Length: 137
Image (tube, rainbow, N blue to C red; front, side, top):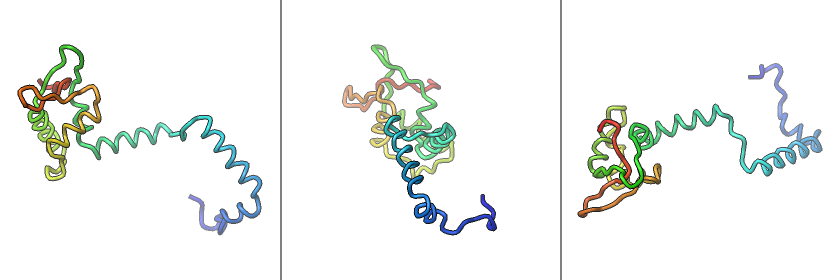
């Protein structure tokens, strides 16, 4: 933080007026780096904080970190209702309020969105997640 006695009032406006050529050069150099890189540079600390926030903000993503994903010819099958019951038990144990958790249909859709290798199938008209096995099972 800059101490009050060292602050320059309206410094941004002064730079734009008094140093316009340097400001333009700085902006062009930044745009050039962005175009070359194809994205904004994201510090590792920001990625770590964002990942932590996502886990806290999305209980399904946090829960998925506790399951083992199997895919392929011999992938596990888990009834969606059983996966959902395990999710709700985990989420409430982690301190999420039950009334803020998604419904079972939304749960299944978000599991698949987070883990595309998991598929929803309906053998015998029973909603089943293919490729999902609970770590505890």
